[in-house]
Length: 487
Ligand code: SF4
Ligand code: FE
Image (tube, rainbow, N blue to C red; front, side):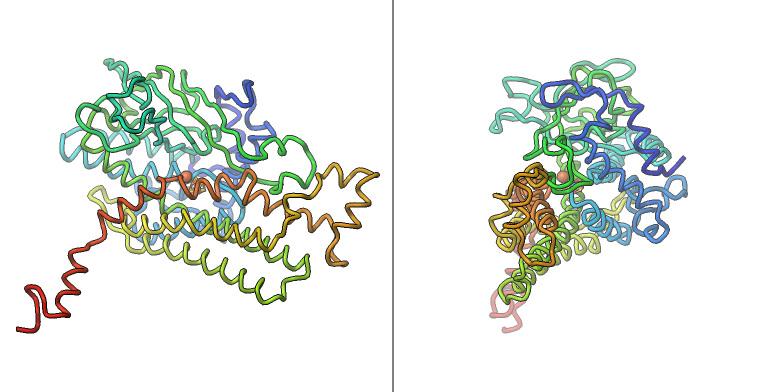
């Protein structure tokens, strides 16, 4: 098959037998559930855009295994050019969907595992990379969406995995068998989990020998027996089930996260890519995190939508010519393009790993993500400033449609006389959706904590910034140190 259309993707999800729970009930048909469906439609865009000839360069790649054309989301980066196209693809999809399109975590996990499975084999003579490449071929051939699952529930944060009062606070092996392993635990905040065909599990932190049973990397079909999904609530999520065209803000797309529970799930050996090699957990976490920090190019695309919405709101209100409004729009663009610089920079400074995979520059990826923890909040603040308070006080769509109140809303909430009141309200709902509603999960809180909270990047920056070299440069200029030109 190699590349699916959006329709084929949707049909493929219907065949999965997922155990999904949401709002206290079992969801038998996630694909058509009104709350989940917009998130599926966002992933479907990763398939749809890959079919468009004018986007072929960005959305597709040539498999280094089969030589066939594949969706870039299943590709192992073979050059810095590939890394740059990944950043461009993220911005494009963020702009087209205005939300999290979910498929990057799988791409990032596949690339990180391609590097680390190779390195484990080089040290221990294992065959993880051989297994992984076979798995990758399967993913590429069927154009699958993979949930890259890293974050454990973690229990008491002051204790390592083996010292937790509940040993399942981190996902672990509970049984080793001739044909495979049995695992138990949970992964939290899993983006797009029920829109995925596969789940690729990685350890959540760097581990020591005592945590050997937690040093795990494996892949399973998302509907493997014993995997259960509990969908996370999002602000304003039930607005999606109310029907209508206004109150949900983004009419077309959304995202979702889930708590994924593994209740003694069997994994055959051919799908195990790390089992006990604790000394490689740190590298796997670091590589995945760096790739995923780069992936926050998506926030630039969502920022494009928010800036566009703020400009429209200003025009509809008749304030777009005011100099302070113009200046706020300039500031939003400045911040957004600064984010774009970061994800392009870490891509163009990428390096070839032993496995042949190209990895982003880790210091620059961390600096980029640190900016992502801040700038979208400032862009959102400016958008709310421009939008005005009506964004959070305006009546519902039902009141707009009601014969009694609709006429009053039409009259009193109109701004510029040539702009229909409803148009103004729709744009304000979109800004609400992005800064306070369900899309704020991706645009704001995920910008803060996704791919690691701010402190995680600060630790990496302090580890990787070459302070000694900076000191040497300073000393030389004032005649201090060994290389002093002044004798
Ligand atoms: Fe991709 Fe962005 Fe969603 Fe993460 S938040 S999965 S990087 S779209
Ligand atoms: Fe994320």
